[in-house]
Image 1 (tube, rainbow, N blue to C red):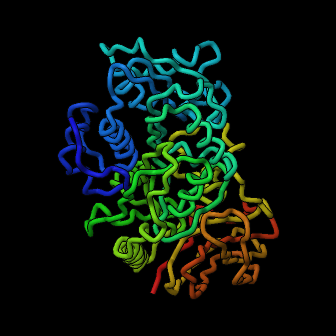
Image 2 (cartoon, rainbow, N blue to C red):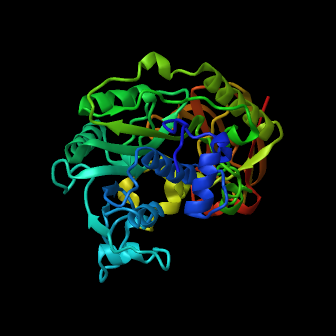
Length: 439
């Protein structure tokens, strides 16, 4: 099967209805469309390798940060030799690469191999993406699926790309997916970067690898392309409910993002102009859909989870990757510094430029001093919290209802904390609540 469509692009819902996408999804993956960006990544990587004639019996390839993703088996069974690489160790925080101490890397990966599939040509190696254990000019192709952003910082990204250039044959290709930002500059958070395309092109140029000429940033105005709100700060929203909502474009603390795919070659030709990367219609659509969703969700009072800011899962903006993590993952996170053990703390939430009304209902079992605090900070980064408003309760036992009114800024996120001068055991958690609405 050949494809005439350009698959060097950002993730879009309309891709799922394209005949080539459907053919690969139905005939190769044998899965229904989920309208999930991870499924999109796998199919688009396959389509780009197919378009470049790399899925052939005489080809040698590899995957980086592979875990146990389905492409290992689907591609590895169709080529001469294929190596899946990752940091396969028993004490990793990444569940997708966490092997048993008694098993080999290959045994771990082959546990997920489909039955009746020839996997004799598949090798599995523990390998750092910055130091590829392959000979010079030995690979016809390689790929990675949203592993690139987890390597480290800028020098680590360039080192990886330079290694890819070294191991690729002259006509080889590197197909990679990573995080795509619509309206923000790159968030430089170790272990979980989110990229703007201008920054990505600078990384490519620094390494000597260059993408194909056209990068498609168009997006149709459809309900499936509308930004999926981060619902985790809301008290009633469990993981099952959140995961059941199809998601092409996600939002974390007011930052919309999705996946994108690049096809890189060692041709030393700078094909894409930075000016060609801007798509005003796409940017406008994403911003408008986010603001509409904020108003739709918060035009009526919503209860915020008053202790979500204290959970391990909310200590980092990497919460969007929690499904891939095990129990011992603190080393991967920049933790929120707890200033006092005696307080409640919501997640930080993005409210755009709306005016917010926070209703705080506190029930105290004895006379204790309580202070309600509203914090402001920049999106995604854990540090830099600033106290912007506070209310002190009179310290009497019983019920307190307080309204905190605040004009939010469209480049900030906000969280409410309730602190005490004594033990939080003196607060009735069951009947204490924090609500918010926008106007």
